[in-house]
Image (cartoon, rainbow, N blue to C red):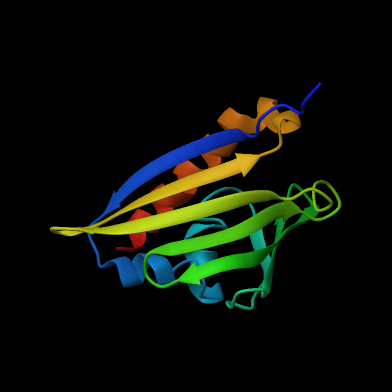
Length: 147
């Protein structure tokens, strides 16, 4: 029996700003703390955001949520500013042995840009697909708020 195909969560968002600004918001810790994590996004506090933005570089994005430290970790696979960013995504101690993959494509439009995010994960995480989509939508709404 062949393994089940990966689950793909897809989110598309328009931004009224240049592709470079949206792209860079994914790689600058101070900016990440304004839209991806922290009290502006959900009930949590940012503990530490470490980013090494180069192909092969890694990140560790630690937050405290409900008294628990959650460390989102990954490795950058592709960085093509300002059009494409691909990285692995996992929660340390839960899914870091089999990380999922996030691909972000950013296309310029007449008055801004369009970001398409595709989060591919093992089929065993299928029950988390809607929660994952909701989470990315919440974060991208907060990112749009920066511009």
